[in-house]
Image 1: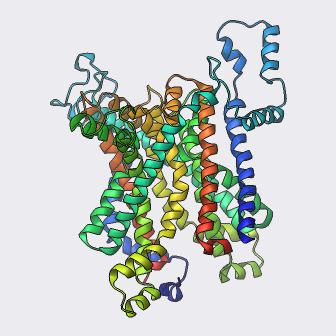
Image 2 (image 1 turned 45 degrees about the vertical axis):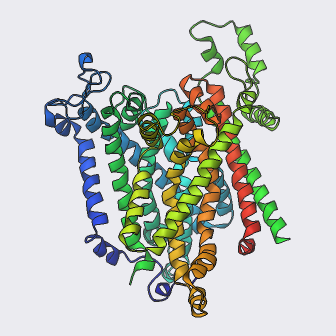
Length: 295
Length: 310
């Protein structure tokens, strides 16, 4: 079906009008505020963990194992008698680090691979598309389970690398198709006629104009990675103690949910709010930069 | 002829993906740094003759490509490896398939019926509180990890209200399967409903709908017959690939609800560090995923003539 909007406006989103619209949208302002707060918390956990006077996540008292919330301990205690609030605040760092690192790895691979496939075409395109198909052949969690199962020491970086390794194919397809559509535009032809090198055309003219769909997708994928990390950790192939992460806390809490629900609820709420903020932000960006909605 | 050509090209693509996927699994498991024979011996020093015998027995002295071919040959004969106690992983899985298939299909059916219904309601009430409310609910549920949802639902409906069995399959299908299947299905609802909503809204504004209305057809016939049928395509494409992903979801959910399926085998194997079982079961699930996606794709092409031209 032909969209009448497409006939008037350019097919490539215009950045300025999108940005202007964003500032008025709550779907942009609220999640951005939440994410900025999360980033500050994960950079300076000690400041926020100490708000209720018990800021050391590793200062534990076995006498108070799994005790419900008490004064100075708003989220209660875990089975080791550690303060759940301090742990949840400190757990933000590894969950967010895994989300951002894995997505950064995926985006980097996708940009290189997708640009080569979309711009240089022919044989490279064929080969890269087949490799992309192979990686798409792994159902999300299962590929990560196989690889992580044979990784002995699983820290934030190892988990992020494996999740990044299985996250790039969809993004690479996005990059490939938007690079192809930009590469056929007149200004690219003009640049070619002027005798610019292909590398310069790609980095200076093609990529900056083709990058927005994949960045929007990447925003949403940060949330998916955070969820995947917690699921892998729950299964026992994700992060390992003594690391502090929401995944580890939720996994431990889910085993004691009947007797002490606070151990599961608080880290879950923090994780869900973070993922929600990321997804709403991604959707907000998608709506703002969607050429079909530009009037 | 076009249909056959399409089937042939899909089968060719499947072969490439199959080789690539098995090779990556092979590399991840068998070619990572570390000596399996050393690991087997633990701290004790091993007699060089024993090491040599073991290496020959497991083809570890052959070059990597030859090891991979041996492994691939085993896969074709249904050999998914043996666990630490010497049982074949393939036979461990045999009795568990019915549970997992029942669970995945129940979840899929729920996802289709509920997801499409939500999308249709949203499209028909576009822009109202109902539309926004349903969107909020489907997005919110997709932000919670599936195992948290599983534990919450299990506690609330199983332990708290006592409506459904807490765990196990003793009550049979469907009673034992409703809760776990619903949790798996909830995860896909936001994608299905959103695709359905978008397609419905596009189609409601299409020219052929205006023509149908102009001919005097009632809203029931216009929406039910024309719009609905044409709007099903994006959602059904998603649902086709999703059947394979549901198998991945069963790993976590079978563990929580203690359903004796393939996923639970994998779940237990990870906990007990049964490396060979983890790899064998995951490989089997990944291969099933590949086969389902191709199978469903071919059925899809058969059903929708327009796809044959692509």
